[in-house]
Length: 404
Image (cartoon, rainbow, N blue to C red; front, side, top):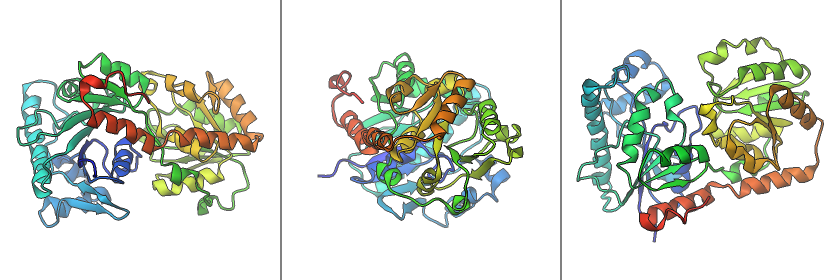
């Protein structure tokens, strides 16, 4: 018997250039149940200012009523994307009655879409998982009664300039309205436990082990590259220590520093584009990342060490390890301690450069298998087993039984 369907309320959009815990988890859950992924709404302001952007243009027909708001994923028959309606742009408003009133209007618009999912697909029983979406999903009406309602905390919300403005207090409010809270890191777990009376469980990010552990050919852009490659994959934004990146580029002039992922204006201001040994590829589909890893001699996680990064258990750590690649990281999060036997962790820029140089000299093949074995124990399948236990058991029996 298949488990009940799951409806996701997610801040991350399914076609975002950023990898997300929300969509990775939704894809994994869709392997054995029906999953509806109700993504973050665009606002009327987004439409006016960015209607030429491909991400918005593909949704215009839906907003005009010319196309269904359900969208199927070719390689996942049980995963259904649900496009939400347009909402009012209100994040610019200060905290207060006006924001609350308009926020309730936006929330009701999204909940109507949620009601349509339940009605159209005759869902008599379902779970609702809100992943880092504190702006919607509060004050559920009696027509929406999930078997279990979970909130997933995946980042330190107060350190985000945009979503943190109102999200930092709305998140605490919604954590009191759900049945249980899940977090992806130990720091976030401590934060959630201090913010809600609901049970809190640690379910770290996982990895698509099959994808990242399989042999892959280097992408065409690197196929003829003779230099050793230092690789970073992921968002190139506030988490990145740009001073460290520049030191890497300067210290390894005969190697190629490859950055794969979407960049922000912050990156443009660093001057890294001026280095001949720095290659910025832009965002690439998840399925292409194993090829970049195949070409890499070493992978890096050059994060700043601050309150924002302390709460991060990065998706990329297990992706790197699944490919068997050496990893050099800053000591940005206490959750890295569990990997100390298979990665290099640096406490300073100088130590980072030293460890990177040592790693680039070569290594024993046995270490690659050890890394793969570690990542193999952190597959999404294992994480889903933990999540299923949270969804299916009574809250009173769970607090001391769920262990990652």
